[in-house]
Image (cartoon, rainbow, N blue to C red; front, side, top):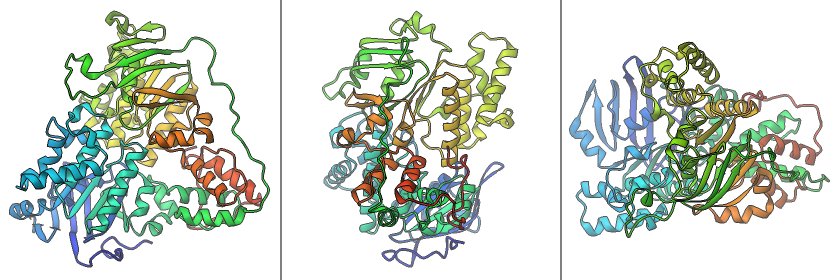
Length: 619
């Protein structure tokens, strides 16, 4: 078992004196106990990563560590200040401690307070009473660090969700905190943005800043000195990343998963290849290169094929679409942002699953809103199911045909009970009460919330709220479902569950158009459309979009390729025979086994390599 959080060894560059100390901390929201007797020490200069399923208490723990929440019981010491003891908060101590603590919220909208980016970044230092010249230097430095200099004069609320998140990170860093708490900071960022955040974290460790990082990305935890896993408000596992993730079955049982290398090494062992289990990608790469170098294996190239669902009229047709938020609101200014969409042409075939990818601010969410007829083009034309969206009366004909799941679907919730919330959409379609009731039951069954029908949607966990909002859309039985980052903020178990739901809907004939920053999710789509600077620059099957020919182009646009494909190419560079173009872990594992000439008979599973079911792997 990994060591308890309070005694686990810290990194070599971390002081032995805790900069944050929690002892037997308990905190409840009504009848819900969010933290349950949590004891945790965080040392100066340490990078601590906090993992856990939705509703496990991660965000509550983050709020206690940064001084936003006082517990109900226990003791809390923050940056040398005993802020809570004997059941009482010391408000003067909290005030002193907060000057040395920084927090980046999960939702940037909850943290932005001004209408100009550079003023928002300056807000914290101004409240610390720093001189103007120092504030100006900090603002410039932190905007450069998060690659947002060109938006210094922009209105944050006109930026994309990922860009707003970078602004909040810059604002927190501008206060030069001794402890920086990051609550899912990269959940809405593109590949380049996520890498930028992790580089910032690494730089902060070098200057002695303590980082507490809450995340659902398992690979982000690998760079931490220590990992703590929460489960229903208590610490379930703690230790180094390798120690924690080696408890494969426990990690999966907590709704999480191993990082990429851990998943791949487990799958290879299941297929009979006797490799060491590890979550160290470099170590796995080196071992596999030794095992496969010199073996003969034929390359399994992905067949180009024709675009799926090529016959018949498309369900969505966009022709030379241009759209600007400033123009649509008749508020042109000298510093107005460029057009969100600039000459977009794209067709979505009936029954297809189309993934829209692109770096933050490329126009993906805007295109999705236009497809859902929530906005109309300034120029060009969009038809949905043959209906032009420019005219208000025509748009009414699309009610019930198009389902739109926004980037934060839980913010659609409003009713007293889950069932009432889900019933709102179908009730407005003029259906009979019995038909509405049947649709509500079917939708709740589909998302796994049938037993929560009488609960308040606001008492659900974050992941359950997202599924509840999705059920409200599904109850209208739309022919076209458009989704903006549907898996953002979900734990691994929630992501797998949502994928199964969407795959089932698509198999039954529902057309899906999905914005995603996860190249692994995009790889499972029929078609992938790549946006850059408000234009569609590439549209093809996933195999063709992520082919060798497009690798450099994708890199230059700030995008990556699916992790399995990147690993396969790295293996080939290390001397492994060609592995084809595997886009999933399963196809990659099969290709490696063939290359290594492994025996068909599986080896005996170990504690760190036990077999996962297809359901656990999200197949």
